Image (cartoon, rainbow, N blue to C red; front, side, top):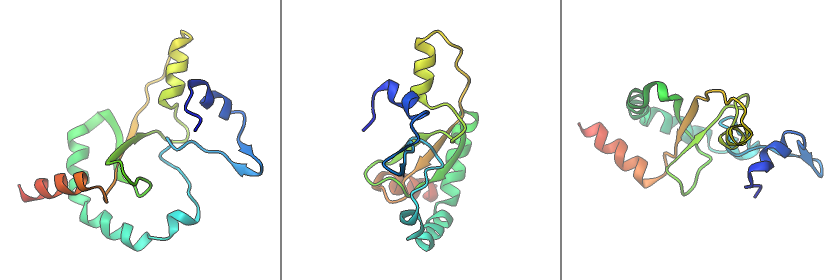
Length: 129
């Protein structure tokens, strides 16, 4: 699982294991290879259907997030907050703060699961008004 605070620091030096690349699932630019390519047509339709809802969420959150977008990497969770590959993650920021180091401001990406019933319900309610 690699859920301990020190794991992220360790993975910045250990980038692969047994010939497989290791990557953080908390990054917005997560590359799932062939798994991500399978449902591209469905994803395009959902992007169009949720377009106005995404814009409303962007306006609501404003400068607190870098962007709002749909993600197809989630199954049971309605949303996730992630960082870009070149940004410091929350765990690493906690390590820096605990060590008394300055922590740079991070703008997060807010990703919504279009398949989750809660996201669908909120999008429908917002579209009715």
